Every structure is written in C-alpha cells, then in structure tokens.
Image (cartoon, rainbow, N blue to C red; front, side):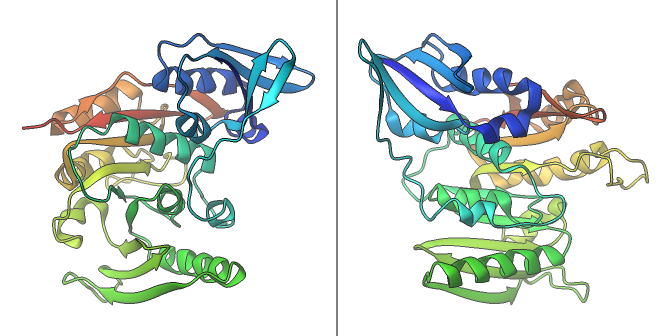
Length: 316
C-alpha cells in the first residue's frame, strides 16, 4: 500500500534544518524494510512509503506525523488512524516552564524506548524519568497509557506539575485523585516529598530527590522503560564545578541500571558536545548497559547538537 505521511510543522521547529534526517531515522527504526522518500510539495513536507500490511496505530504514533494518506491513481485519500492516546494533546503541551524538554523529541524518545523494550511482563508497562523536571516525559507517558514516575532534585518541579495538572483537569472537567506524601528518606530540604495523581485509571508520580538515589527513593521498584533528557551543560554544573554533565551521568548510571528491569530500555536525550556520544556510551556500558545503534544528531544552536542514545539492560 502506497502511503504518504504528512510531516508536522512542529517537527521542523524541533529539529530545524536537520528535520529530514530525524524523520528518516525514526521511520526506518520502526519500518526498516519499507522504502522511504522525503520531499516537499505545495509547501508541505511528506514522507512516502510502500507498506504491505501497515500498522496504522504505530504509524500514527510516530512523533513527526500530522496526517496519514493513501496514494492511488485518483490521488490522495485521507486515512482515519487512531494513535490510541489518552487525554488531549494539551495535557502535554499546556505544561509551560523554563527549561522544558521539547515535546516532539520527548515523544520520539518514548517511542524508541518502547520499541527496544525486551522485558517480559503481563502487567502494566511502567516508565521512570530520573531527571524529570516539570514532568514532560511523565505527561507524555501517561498519554501512552503507561504508569509514570519521575524524580527531580528541585522541589519546585512538584509545584510546576501540580499547577498544570490542576488547571488541565479543571478545564477538561476530568475526575482525578491527588495525594501528597513523603518517602522514608524525607529531609527538611524536601527530599523524599512526592505528589501522586490517578488520572484515567493510571498513576503519575513525581518525587523530589537525587537521581543517584532512585532505588532507595522508590523502594527499589523496577521499570520497563527509563526516558530522560540530561541537562545540556550550558547552565548546569557537575559535582566538580565544571559545566559538564558527565560527572552526574557517571554518578547516576548505577542507580538507573538498578531501576530498569532486565530487558528494559532506556532512551537518553543529550547534547552530543557535552559529553561526546562515545564518552556517554562508555559511561553507560561501564555500568552494564548495552547500546543500540540508533542515532540522529540535530543542531539546536552553536553550543548544542542534540541526539538520542538508546540502551538495554541485558537479561541475566
């Protein structure tokens, strides 16, 4: 079946001039045997392919897709495809805060983690963002139907997430429950404090604490997926006082490995200038992670070339 995927303008805004490369990388990761042509026509950007038995839900969930069309002799015919997301897009896009992870990149990272997840479970899939910030990954994961948990060292992240969820549920008149609490590792600085929501029969939790202590903070819970956006080293300093996130990565990877189920996948968004990809991979592999081949670097600015690395925790 000849299919055209309409590339969203939001994708171009996320990846700038490198958007075609990222679109190609995501599509071929999921459909490696299908031909690909990416082009512009009538001021619209398209990916055209030929798929014998298309999985329309998987196509609709690709992070760059705005619409799906079938091409035949008479022209293009729009196809109605349900990505099976819960809630509306505003659940993610409406959460505004400084330093927010790009929503399109976050969706791509979740797609990759789901694709490479090899852990076996008949239970609800779970996702941990160990550097959650204001919760973009948690909100996206919730739309995918995942049980989501996040950790962030800044206690203001809890306030940011609560402000957004309160506003969204009020506007949408959405029933939900909220509870506040603290883990057994609570301190006066707020470490261990958490908020827990249940929305659309799925739980979403954010805990204040150090990512390197995630097993203790979360009672050694293990997750199918880990997805995070590592600080890019422009405004953040490591423990050695230098503007490099590598020190923090080395500090945290043992806890991340322990928090991931055997066979589970971790997708890491990072600035490939700090650290370089091979240095990042070396740090993860030193802990026991196995690296997949996915890579799609794209320039954001003179000091940031963003990329995504995907790792697995091997079955033992």
